[in-house]
Image (cartoon, rainbow over all chains, first blue to last red):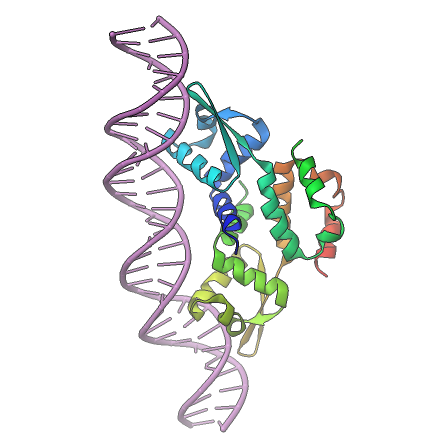
Length: 107
Length: 107
DNA sequence: ATATCTCATATCCATTTGGCTATGCATTGA
DNA sequence: TCAATGCATAGCCAAATGGATATGAGATAT
């Protein structure tokens, strides 16, 4: 039960947080206000969720003036991939080079 | 935010439940008592967690006499794969036949 | 300078969650 | 038949969680 793994699973368990992450995966850089409309919760709640996602390594933030742009760190999904791979116990055959795989995920 | 998807993510968020599922993925059919030692919690708690895992479609139970054998339904991981695929936006290329994939997961 | 805007932190609160013990119902063994 | 085993359900409780509002600190615009 790795610490990071636990943080990732826990972070993605909440629908609001998953929604935020999904938004960032689709839309790229977005400010907190930009995420606000879709999220359906108040701004402080969005900030709080983003903090949790960040702690799990799922998002990255970049400060620009008074704005804070958040973006998805899709490489963090490797944690999910790894775990699922291990549980399924068979993907390894197809993905014999996970690092290369992750590089392609960045595109 | 599909209902099943939410149940799966939520079910796997708890370390104890993940532990139970992992055990079942490695060990195959196991009774509740068989899961008890590893779980580190009381029997009723194990039963409760198994119920949640079952509701999420992650495990299956088979009654045999006074025993109840639980087993992992690894196909349920397809929910994770689907979501991650969508977020990562690239696996599709390699997995153009997910059904075939899932069949192989059963082995 | 002052008001406005963006965002984070601080409280606070209701609900959910994850654990426990107690218990009951089958099923099996003596 | 009666005790023991396997398992689920019922309560119970402390802690965690997800939400809201209030507020403050920077940054920008007027």
